[in-house]
Length: 377
Image: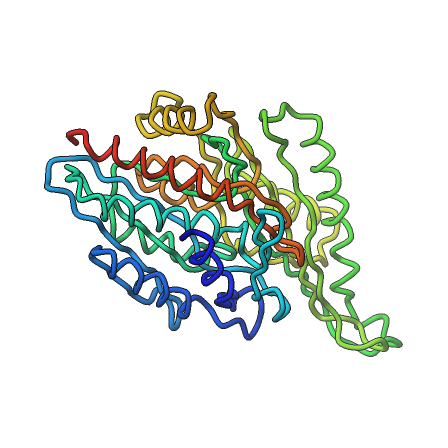
Protein backbone atom coordinates (compact mmCIF):
# COMPACT_ATOMS: atom_id res chain seq x y z
CA UNK A 1 0.00 0.00 0.00
CA UNK A 2 2.69 2.49 0.99
CA UNK A 3 4.93 1.69 -1.98
CA UNK A 4 2.11 2.32 -4.47
CA UNK A 5 1.06 5.55 -2.80
CA UNK A 6 4.61 6.83 -2.51
CA UNK A 7 5.30 5.97 -6.15
CA UNK A 8 2.26 8.01 -7.17
CA UNK A 9 3.40 10.96 -5.06
CA UNK A 10 6.95 10.89 -6.41
CA UNK A 11 5.74 10.52 -10.00
CA UNK A 12 3.71 13.73 -9.62
CA UNK A 13 5.97 16.71 -10.32
CA UNK A 14 5.43 19.27 -7.53
CA UNK A 15 8.40 21.55 -8.16
CA UNK A 16 8.23 24.79 -6.21
CA UNK A 17 7.96 27.62 -8.79
CA UNK A 18 9.53 30.15 -6.44
CA UNK A 19 12.74 28.10 -6.43
CA UNK A 20 12.69 26.81 -10.00
CA UNK A 21 11.13 29.19 -12.56
CA UNK A 22 8.49 27.28 -14.48
CA UNK A 23 7.93 24.81 -11.67
CA UNK A 24 4.42 23.36 -11.79
CA UNK A 25 3.63 23.76 -8.09
CA UNK A 26 1.56 21.53 -5.84
CA UNK A 27 -1.86 21.42 -7.53
CA UNK A 28 -1.42 17.96 -9.06
CA UNK A 29 -0.18 16.23 -5.93
CA UNK A 30 -2.84 18.02 -3.88
CA UNK A 31 -5.50 16.37 -6.06
CA UNK A 32 -4.00 12.92 -5.43
CA UNK A 33 -3.92 13.47 -1.68
CA UNK A 34 -7.35 15.10 -1.40
CA UNK A 35 -9.00 12.36 -3.46
CA UNK A 36 -7.40 9.60 -1.44
CA UNK A 37 -8.25 11.05 1.96
CA UNK A 38 -11.82 11.81 0.92
CA UNK A 39 -12.19 8.18 -0.17
CA UNK A 40 -11.02 7.16 3.32
CA UNK A 41 -13.91 9.13 4.84
CA UNK A 42 -12.07 12.22 6.04
CA UNK A 43 -13.48 15.74 5.72
CA UNK A 44 -11.24 17.42 3.15
CA UNK A 45 -10.61 21.15 2.84
CA UNK A 46 -8.51 22.22 -0.13
CA UNK A 47 -7.72 25.89 -0.58
CA UNK A 48 -5.21 27.97 -2.52
CA UNK A 49 -2.62 29.83 -0.48
CA UNK A 50 -1.38 31.49 -3.68
CA UNK A 51 -2.61 30.97 -7.24
CA UNK A 52 -2.14 27.29 -8.08
CA UNK A 53 -0.45 26.67 -4.68
CA UNK A 54 -2.93 24.72 -2.52
CA UNK A 55 -2.95 23.27 0.96
CA UNK A 56 -4.94 20.12 1.69
CA UNK A 57 -6.26 19.74 5.26
CA UNK A 58 -8.19 16.53 5.95
CA UNK A 59 -9.82 15.70 9.28
CA UNK A 60 -10.79 12.36 10.80
CA UNK A 61 -13.42 13.53 13.27
CA UNK A 62 -13.43 12.28 16.83
CA UNK A 63 -16.59 11.90 18.87
CA UNK A 64 -15.71 14.98 20.93
CA UNK A 65 -13.85 16.05 24.03
CA UNK A 66 -10.41 14.75 23.03
CA UNK A 67 -7.12 16.29 22.02
CA UNK A 68 -6.48 17.13 18.36
CA UNK A 69 -3.32 15.84 16.66
CA UNK A 70 -1.99 17.14 13.38
CA UNK A 71 0.23 15.11 11.02
CA UNK A 72 1.80 17.77 8.84
CA UNK A 73 4.04 17.59 5.78
CA UNK A 74 4.96 19.54 2.66
CA UNK A 75 4.19 18.61 -0.94
CA UNK A 76 6.72 20.77 -2.80
CA UNK A 77 10.11 19.68 -4.06
CA UNK A 78 13.12 21.43 -5.56
CA UNK A 79 13.71 21.23 -9.30
CA UNK A 80 14.77 18.02 -11.03
CA UNK A 81 15.23 16.44 -14.43
CA UNK A 82 12.15 14.66 -15.84
CA UNK A 83 13.61 11.21 -15.20
CA UNK A 84 13.76 11.94 -11.47
CA UNK A 85 9.97 11.92 -11.42
CA UNK A 86 9.98 8.27 -12.50
CA UNK A 87 10.10 6.34 -9.20
CA UNK A 88 12.22 3.21 -9.13
CA UNK A 89 12.42 0.56 -6.40
CA UNK A 90 15.76 -1.18 -5.84
CA UNK A 91 16.90 -3.20 -2.83
CA UNK A 92 14.11 -1.96 -0.59
CA UNK A 93 14.65 1.68 -1.51
CA UNK A 94 12.42 3.93 -3.57
CA UNK A 95 14.40 6.42 -5.65
CA UNK A 96 13.07 9.69 -7.08
CA UNK A 97 12.77 13.41 -6.44
CA UNK A 98 11.03 14.02 -3.14
CA UNK A 99 11.11 10.38 -2.02
CA UNK A 100 13.08 11.37 1.07
CA UNK A 101 12.19 15.06 1.36
CA UNK A 102 9.43 14.51 2.19
CA UNK A 103 6.95 12.42 0.27
CA UNK A 104 7.98 9.30 2.21
CA UNK A 105 6.87 10.90 5.47
CA UNK A 106 3.75 12.32 3.84
CA UNK A 107 2.81 8.84 2.58
CA UNK A 108 3.34 7.46 6.10
CA UNK A 109 0.97 10.08 7.55
CA UNK A 110 -1.70 9.37 4.94
CA UNK A 111 -1.56 5.62 5.47
CA UNK A 112 -1.60 6.03 9.26
CA UNK A 113 -4.84 8.02 9.21
CA UNK A 114 -6.38 5.71 6.59
CA UNK A 115 -5.78 2.78 8.94
CA UNK A 116 -7.33 4.67 11.83
CA UNK A 117 -10.38 5.47 9.72
CA UNK A 118 -10.71 1.88 8.49
CA UNK A 119 -10.48 0.46 12.01
CA UNK A 120 -13.78 2.05 13.00
CA UNK A 121 -12.33 2.65 16.44
CA UNK A 122 -13.86 5.82 17.89
CA UNK A 123 -11.43 8.49 19.02
CA UNK A 124 -12.31 11.40 21.26
CA UNK A 125 -10.23 13.95 19.42
CA UNK A 126 -9.65 14.76 15.75
CA UNK A 127 -6.71 13.51 13.68
CA UNK A 128 -5.73 16.05 11.01
CA UNK A 129 -3.52 15.44 7.98
CA UNK A 130 -2.15 18.70 6.56
CA UNK A 131 -0.33 18.60 3.21
CA UNK A 132 1.27 21.98 2.61
CA UNK A 133 2.75 24.04 -0.18
CA UNK A 134 5.99 26.00 -0.23
CA UNK A 135 8.09 24.61 2.62
CA UNK A 136 11.19 24.75 0.43
CA UNK A 137 10.94 28.53 0.09
CA UNK A 138 8.95 30.76 2.47
CA UNK A 139 6.54 28.33 4.17
CA UNK A 140 3.46 30.24 3.09
CA UNK A 141 1.50 26.99 3.35
CA UNK A 142 2.40 26.49 7.00
CA UNK A 143 1.70 30.13 7.81
CA UNK A 144 -1.77 29.90 6.28
CA UNK A 145 -2.41 26.56 8.00
CA UNK A 146 -1.90 27.98 11.50
CA UNK A 147 -4.13 30.94 10.67
CA UNK A 148 -6.97 28.56 9.78
CA UNK A 149 -6.44 25.37 11.78
CA UNK A 150 -5.50 24.68 15.38
CA UNK A 151 -4.36 21.52 17.15
CA UNK A 152 -3.10 20.47 20.55
CA UNK A 153 0.08 19.00 19.08
CA UNK A 154 1.63 18.02 15.77
CA UNK A 155 4.09 15.56 14.29
CA UNK A 156 6.10 16.49 11.22
CA UNK A 157 7.34 13.33 9.43
CA UNK A 158 10.33 15.00 7.80
CA UNK A 159 13.33 12.67 7.25
CA UNK A 160 14.87 11.85 10.63
CA UNK A 161 16.21 8.29 10.34
CA UNK A 162 13.37 7.21 12.70
CA UNK A 163 14.88 9.46 15.37
CA UNK A 164 12.91 11.98 17.40
CA UNK A 165 13.83 15.61 16.76
CA UNK A 166 12.70 17.96 19.51
CA UNK A 167 14.85 20.96 18.62
CA UNK A 168 16.14 22.53 15.45
CA UNK A 169 17.96 25.60 14.33
CA UNK A 170 16.56 28.71 12.74
CA UNK A 171 17.73 30.81 9.83
CA UNK A 172 17.35 34.14 8.11
CA UNK A 173 17.90 35.24 4.53
CA UNK A 174 18.91 38.79 3.71
CA UNK A 175 20.04 40.92 0.81
CA UNK A 176 22.32 43.93 1.00
CA UNK A 177 22.09 46.22 -2.03
CA UNK A 178 25.04 48.49 -2.74
CA UNK A 179 24.27 51.64 -4.73
CA UNK A 180 26.87 53.25 -6.97
CA UNK A 181 26.90 55.72 -9.84
CA UNK A 182 26.85 54.43 -13.41
CA UNK A 183 29.42 55.97 -15.71
CA UNK A 184 31.76 55.00 -18.50
CA UNK A 185 34.87 53.22 -17.32
CA UNK A 186 37.05 56.16 -18.35
CA UNK A 187 35.03 58.60 -16.24
CA UNK A 188 36.78 57.84 -12.98
CA UNK A 189 35.78 61.11 -11.35
CA UNK A 190 32.11 60.49 -12.03
CA UNK A 191 31.65 56.73 -11.59
CA UNK A 192 31.14 54.97 -8.25
CA UNK A 193 31.71 51.21 -8.13
CA UNK A 194 28.76 49.52 -6.37
CA UNK A 195 30.52 46.14 -6.50
CA UNK A 196 33.76 47.40 -4.95
CA UNK A 197 31.86 49.18 -2.18
CA UNK A 198 30.59 45.76 -0.99
CA UNK A 199 34.15 44.57 -0.27
CA UNK A 200 34.17 45.58 3.42
CA UNK A 201 30.75 43.97 3.90
CA UNK A 202 32.02 40.65 2.51
CA UNK A 203 35.06 40.86 4.79
CA UNK A 204 32.81 41.58 7.79
CA UNK A 205 30.64 38.54 6.95
CA UNK A 206 33.74 36.35 6.89
CA UNK A 207 34.97 37.79 10.17
CA UNK A 208 31.59 37.29 11.87
CA UNK A 209 31.50 33.65 10.80
CA UNK A 210 34.94 33.13 12.35
CA UNK A 211 33.66 34.71 15.56
CA UNK A 212 30.56 32.48 15.53
CA UNK A 213 32.83 29.46 15.16
CA UNK A 214 34.42 30.36 18.49
CA UNK A 215 31.13 30.78 20.35
CA UNK A 216 29.43 27.92 22.23
CA UNK A 217 27.55 25.66 19.84
CA UNK A 218 24.31 23.70 20.20
CA UNK A 219 24.51 19.92 20.44
CA UNK A 220 23.56 19.73 16.76
CA UNK A 221 25.68 22.50 15.24
CA UNK A 222 26.93 26.08 15.41
CA UNK A 223 25.61 29.41 14.31
CA UNK A 224 27.04 30.59 11.00
CA UNK A 225 26.80 33.21 8.29
CA UNK A 226 27.86 33.19 4.65
CA UNK A 227 27.37 35.07 1.41
CA UNK A 228 25.14 32.96 -0.85
CA UNK A 229 24.70 34.93 -4.08
CA UNK A 230 26.03 38.08 -5.68
CA UNK A 231 24.76 39.95 -8.74
CA UNK A 232 25.76 43.28 -10.15
CA UNK A 233 27.08 45.33 -13.00
CA UNK A 234 25.83 45.94 -16.52
CA UNK A 235 28.82 45.52 -18.82
CA UNK A 236 32.60 45.56 -18.71
CA UNK A 237 33.35 49.21 -19.70
CA UNK A 238 30.87 50.70 -17.20
CA UNK A 239 30.98 51.52 -13.50
CA UNK A 240 28.24 49.39 -11.89
CA UNK A 241 25.35 51.29 -10.31
CA UNK A 242 24.05 48.40 -8.27
CA UNK A 243 25.21 45.16 -6.67
CA UNK A 244 23.27 42.77 -4.46
CA UNK A 245 24.71 40.14 -2.12
CA UNK A 246 22.45 37.43 -0.71
CA UNK A 247 23.25 36.25 2.81
CA UNK A 248 22.19 33.25 4.90
CA UNK A 249 22.47 33.28 8.69
CA UNK A 250 22.01 29.89 10.43
CA UNK A 251 20.76 30.28 14.00
CA UNK A 252 20.98 28.19 17.18
CA UNK A 253 19.23 28.63 20.54
CA UNK A 254 20.06 31.99 22.06
CA UNK A 255 20.09 33.64 18.62
CA UNK A 256 17.18 35.21 16.77
CA UNK A 257 16.60 36.35 13.22
CA UNK A 258 16.05 39.90 14.45
CA UNK A 259 19.43 39.70 16.14
CA UNK A 260 20.91 38.57 12.83
CA UNK A 261 19.32 41.58 11.15
CA UNK A 262 20.90 43.84 13.76
CA UNK A 263 24.32 42.28 13.05
CA UNK A 264 24.00 43.23 9.40
CA UNK A 265 22.81 46.75 10.19
CA UNK A 266 25.89 47.15 12.38
CA UNK A 267 28.10 45.98 9.49
CA UNK A 268 26.50 48.55 7.21
CA UNK A 269 26.91 51.34 9.75
CA UNK A 270 30.58 50.52 10.29
CA UNK A 271 31.25 50.41 6.56
CA UNK A 272 29.52 53.74 5.91
CA UNK A 273 31.44 55.31 8.79
CA UNK A 274 34.68 54.33 7.06
CA UNK A 275 33.48 55.34 3.59
CA UNK A 276 30.82 58.10 3.48
CA UNK A 277 30.35 57.49 -0.25
CA UNK A 278 29.10 53.96 0.41
CA UNK A 279 25.32 53.52 0.19
CA UNK A 280 23.55 50.32 1.23
CA UNK A 281 20.03 48.98 1.67
CA UNK A 282 19.19 45.91 3.79
CA UNK A 283 16.23 43.67 2.97
CA UNK A 284 15.24 40.69 5.13
CA UNK A 285 13.58 38.06 2.95
CA UNK A 286 12.55 35.65 5.69
CA UNK A 287 13.48 35.00 9.32
CA UNK A 288 12.80 31.91 11.46
CA UNK A 289 13.90 31.43 15.06
CA UNK A 290 15.19 28.13 16.51
CA UNK A 291 12.78 25.64 18.14
CA UNK A 292 13.12 23.65 21.37
CA UNK A 293 10.52 21.29 22.88
CA UNK A 294 10.75 19.78 26.35
CA UNK A 295 10.92 16.00 26.77
CA UNK A 296 7.85 16.27 29.01
CA UNK A 297 5.61 17.46 26.16
CA UNK A 298 2.84 14.82 25.90
CA UNK A 299 3.32 14.34 22.16
CA UNK A 300 7.06 13.80 22.64
CA UNK A 301 6.54 11.24 25.42
CA UNK A 302 3.93 9.33 23.41
CA UNK A 303 6.10 9.39 20.29
CA UNK A 304 9.11 8.01 22.15
CA UNK A 305 6.96 5.26 23.68
CA UNK A 306 5.41 4.27 20.33
CA UNK A 307 8.78 4.29 18.55
CA UNK A 308 10.29 2.17 21.33
CA UNK A 309 7.52 -0.41 20.95
CA UNK A 310 7.78 -0.47 17.16
CA UNK A 311 11.57 -0.69 16.96
CA UNK A 312 12.34 -2.79 20.02
CA UNK A 313 14.37 -0.10 21.74
CA UNK A 314 14.26 3.61 22.53
CA UNK A 315 14.85 5.99 19.62
CA UNK A 316 17.55 8.62 19.59
CA UNK A 317 16.20 11.98 20.74
CA UNK A 318 18.18 14.87 19.29
CA UNK A 319 18.28 18.28 17.66
CA UNK A 320 19.04 19.22 14.06
CA UNK A 321 20.56 22.35 12.55
CA UNK A 322 18.17 22.61 9.59
CA UNK A 323 14.95 24.60 9.96
CA UNK A 324 11.60 22.96 9.22
CA UNK A 325 7.90 23.91 9.11
CA UNK A 326 7.62 22.75 12.71
CA UNK A 327 8.95 26.19 13.64
CA UNK A 328 5.84 27.87 12.24
CA UNK A 329 3.59 25.54 14.23
CA UNK A 330 5.53 26.01 17.47
CA UNK A 331 5.41 29.80 17.04
CA UNK A 332 1.62 29.45 16.72
CA UNK A 333 1.40 27.56 20.03
CA UNK A 334 1.23 24.03 18.57
CA UNK A 335 3.98 21.79 20.01
CA UNK A 336 5.47 20.00 16.99
CA UNK A 337 7.98 17.15 17.05
CA UNK A 338 9.74 15.65 14.03
CA UNK A 339 9.79 11.92 13.29
CA UNK A 340 10.25 10.52 9.80
CA UNK A 341 11.77 7.76 7.70
CA UNK A 342 15.32 6.92 6.67
CA UNK A 343 16.93 7.87 3.37
CA UNK A 344 19.46 10.18 1.75
CA UNK A 345 20.23 12.35 -1.23
CA UNK A 346 17.55 14.99 -0.80
CA UNK A 347 17.80 17.74 -3.46
CA UNK A 348 20.10 15.52 -5.57
CA UNK A 349 19.68 13.12 -8.48
CA UNK A 350 20.17 10.06 -6.23
CA UNK A 351 17.47 10.76 -3.64
CA UNK A 352 15.98 7.69 -1.98
CA UNK A 353 13.92 6.55 0.99
CA UNK A 354 13.94 3.19 2.75
CA UNK A 355 10.49 1.62 2.29
CA UNK A 356 10.63 -0.42 5.50
CA UNK A 357 11.29 2.77 7.47
CA UNK A 358 8.26 4.44 5.83
CA UNK A 359 6.13 1.52 7.02
CA UNK A 360 7.59 1.80 10.54
CA UNK A 361 6.92 5.54 10.51
CA UNK A 362 3.28 4.92 9.54
CA UNK A 363 2.88 2.40 12.35
CA UNK A 364 4.32 4.80 14.92
CA UNK A 365 2.19 7.72 13.72
CA UNK A 366 -0.93 5.56 13.91
CA UNK A 367 -0.16 4.50 17.47
CA UNK A 368 0.64 8.02 18.65
CA UNK A 369 -2.57 9.36 17.12
CA UNK A 370 -4.61 6.63 18.76
CA UNK A 371 -3.08 7.33 22.17
CA UNK A 372 -3.06 11.12 21.93
CA UNK A 373 -6.59 11.50 20.60
CA UNK A 374 -8.06 8.98 23.05
CA UNK A 375 -7.30 11.32 25.95
CA UNK A 376 -9.55 14.12 27.09
CA UNK A 377 -8.34 17.53 25.98
